[in-house]
Image 1 (tube, rainbow, N blue to C red):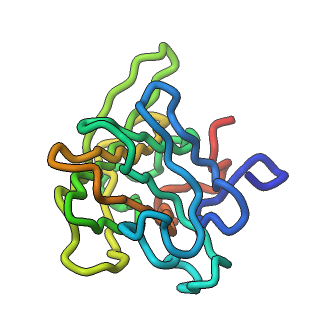
Image 2: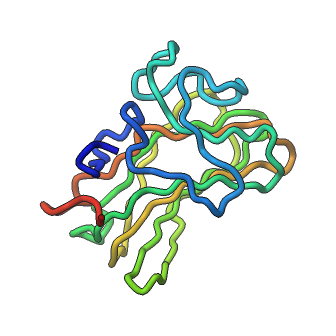
Length: 187
């Protein structure tokens, strides 16, 4: 995270740290920072941001080899303040990579965090199975009906047929409509 303790997410590409994202401790295994080709050859051959094959760019991925079927890895954002608009103008944008014979599922959800520690969760996107080509895919998901501070979570699931298939995410950003003129993080 930058020295100011904030990451704006306008250009979160993992080139300068984790961009305010962290692994959740209660899951089965972790997302890791990747450069160049994923070691398993099932993940991306390069990051999306720089598209360099020389390991100069970064992305995060979950490597499913060595994991048990059904295991999950959860990557969670820092807490964001409630968006000034809740009618879908606020959007999360990202690139994902799902390739390998038995890649299973990637899910994105938004969790509203209440002061009383109650959490409301809404799944906003699911992708089952692999993308037909070994490439990065762009996706935009509207964040609707958010009435409180929130976090975003990417959950990757290991497949049941085999653990051969990796999932990666890069260039996560929130649209400008997600922010008012105030702080971007609830610190």
